[in-house]
Image (tube, rainbow, N blue to C red):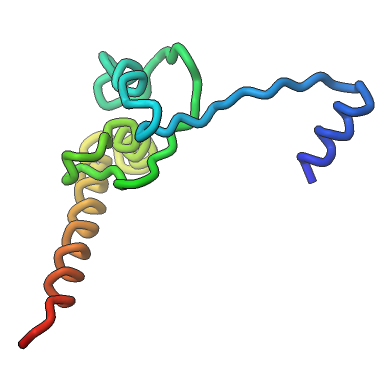
Length: 117
């Protein structure tokens, strides 16, 4: 419904719109920009970002125990979410607990799916 209103108002000349590609797929565009944005921010959202965009993590899903996936931006967002309810230490505990549960689930699936002879 929102798209309809925006496009119809644009067609009538009531508003002006522009198109911009905000999606950043690090598998295609590389992770250098994301690394640069996170540099110096510690484990908090960066104060300034040169080029706003939406990071799309297709393929390997980022979590702390997967060193092949770049997980820092996602981990920062998860920590910020948990800090609002649990404080700094509680946020880290929540993120570690979620990732341990995820890792345990992966291990269980692999162990339980091994065919016996």
